[in-house]
Image: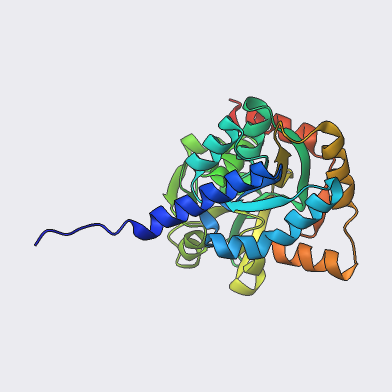
Length: 277
């Protein structure tokens, strides 16, 4: 029996998103593209609920409506920046906003606090005390194309360890890294400081062997339809967020401690650092 694909749901969603963006532009509103990377498990409705408070804070600061658009696929995120369809982009991994600035004419606005780090972790009972102790051992990292593996690779390169010369296993999910360590399939692993496994290392029986230099986390960048004076107003509004109940609610919803406007130079240098030999 011949099967027919049901495209009604995805097609309706695509049409709804297109209509939303078109409608927003008709009102001179802005679109805020949100990407949580491969670790995010949200759908579009959940993303709106999670980030609309932030969008409202941004919009209030410049007296323009800001509408959330959830971007699940990296190709769509890149295309949205290349075409300028996304007026504001807040994304992890951070190399996408960095490319927005470097290649697509976007302006840095803020990054989230705290910064992001690569954590080199081992079991609590591991005899290793320094990175030098880990040379020649069994390493485990996320898949080679992932941002955090590129991040950790650059950090280790600067510390004299070339992963291409090490015994490395690559896995799809960061949660698998602690599984490999726990079951002694690997000796040393690399994870993101903002990942799920990183939040429960001590309780899970692991410790940090090395913490990388900090890099901007979850940056917000602005496209051509957001003027320089508007960028400045957004920066003031977001960096001033504090203990007021409405601020606390927004920050908690987004999952950050606050925002920092002083990471522009580091974001601009990020791509070079990641790709340096």
